[in-house]
Image (tube, rainbow over all chains, first blue to last red; front, side):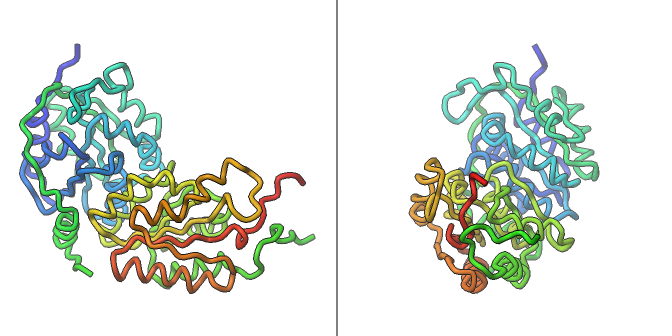
Length: 193
Length: 180
């Protein structure tokens, strides 16, 4: 049995001293984890559009090659849009990191098993799609190493973080999409229409 | 021997006019799923060093991609075939909630002179599906209309953070020749 991390602890450690990092979080628990680590103008949380976290982060990373961008999502959301990994690998943005918090469960719908619980290995999928770096992280040391690399330009990077299958208390982020868009754009010096 | 135009295709360089409209609207990112009707525009986008041309595995990725581009201040467009509209439906809820410029350029299948009946159901449902999800649609069936229709859809998208789709009619594109 592989070691498993506490999701809140892992995300907080990953985002410590985040600097100018921009983060797109997939709906459900990863969005709550991001909010629990501290709301930030550079955060964009999804509440729907399942499968879109990685494409949104890709569009942002290509538009802003000067900023590190993180897609933070779960195994269920990633499984719904696996093709996006091939799209990212082909587009090859050097400033994008995809992190999947993998508990092998659909937390929001009753902890039903996902395909990673029965053997799908997302880091190997990412590698096979052409990611130059794809790892599975099981320790806080691994998180610390990943955090240091968020700003390196050798991406795109992919990491699966093995987390404990429990339901952390919900910490709800804003669900007003227009607000989240306007706030993030303003943080980049972009005005409203 | 020069290659004859595709059977029934409109004369006039409408792909050139469409590409010119993209450039005039300062599009920087062209996301696409490979498509015969858009082939010339895709090739020109790939060849243009001022454009990012991103190949998608499915059209719905393009909705998120253009949202991300706009979060970063970049103007993009999504090229697809009418069958791909069906793949986008839930992703279009991103637009309904976030509101961002979302111009879709859709080549039609399953209508005028279609040979493949499997293309017909989605072709028939394309416009209504888009409108159900809050996308404004317009249509070009003649080569001389393409530039103005596309330019207007781009203006509406970027001036109003609207989702707009231009349906490029099958008669404009021409018959697909199945048996030579």
